[in-house]
Image 1 (cartoon, rainbow, N blue to C red):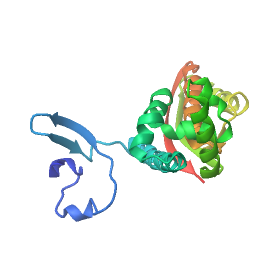
Image 2 (cartoon, one colour):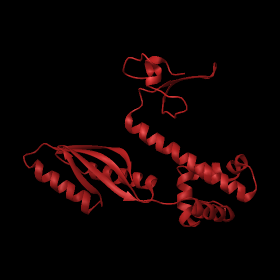
Image 3 (cartoon, rainbow, N blue to C red):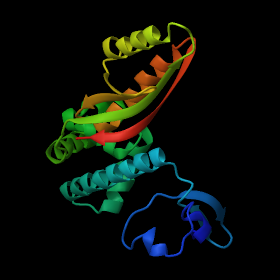
Image 4 (tube, one colour):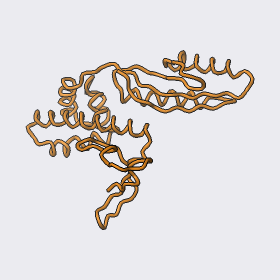
Length: 220
């Protein structure tokens, strides 16, 4: 249940202005009453960046299940049986099934190296290769950078040059202290992880200043 006070930070006069029928929403779990079987949720306490990330994860899960369904048809078994035989194992050994399928679309070796049986790795490779059409996308982050010394402008230039030359990122100026940072890839999920990794390393190296970033999604 979502109490009306947890729908929005604004006054809710008409709930239909905030939520629509047959639409997927991201909510935060506030409380679970196992005895009554009740779950209290909140819409307003979900940050925009978390909402974007969770919606994308949900889309990946849907794509992964479609591929697993095709694998089940190849093996002439039910989807539930496919989960039991290989689906849950992929979820345990990888961050999620879709990441496993993306890796397998190139070669069965990444799955075999993780301990997946060769017979399963080969059929997953076959189905994933047929199912996943890769498109180039840009994963974006908003970066705020500040320096507190007299040569702050020079340090910002040096920091940005480092992002471009050392970390291979594209930089676009928005307005001080905001910058748009992009990385292009045909693997959005892995690219997002790589962008976070590179920005985290770059930000941790800053002296005499501070920086923070947030992922703001994909741009095709």
